[in-house]
Length: 219
Image 1 (cartoon, rainbow, N blue to C red):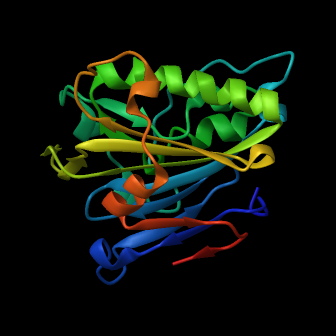
Image 2 (cartoon, rainbow, N blue to C red):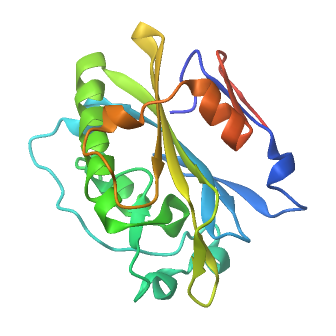
């Protein structure tokens, strides 16, 4: 999982981090760089492989939303979402983990969530997730980065930040190609995810995250 060639994620934390506010949480199937004061990830990254999606007996979606055992106090957030009218929006989708119970459980940690309006989460965002799985099957594996920026409001007693925008970068290694998208966290104006495609430089400019070709992560 960690030796996924040809991509370096360089994160400039200066606009986000004060002291130990941001924590990197390494799980078997994804890594979350989580902002404790905002109670949402700065970025979630993972590799999706054909093997992760190919099994004869698939696990049913568990819906077992839970705090992250690596960061329980900052991620015990189920109560904050209840009654908020926002979905518990997965970064790494549950449907990316149909063949492994550990992966299915991990993806329901709140370190893998941000508040999303339902019409986005269940609409064009979901369509792009389906396309990612098709790409992983076609190419053998893809690398996915997901994050957000801006703020609409805060929800719950823990003041979970509702991001104004959700973004995604998909890297197809065997074609050396990036596919990049930014979605407003509002009712989508289009059901076609291609309408939200942007150059990678736009995501870099708005998030202060730089993507380079290499193999390590520098913070």
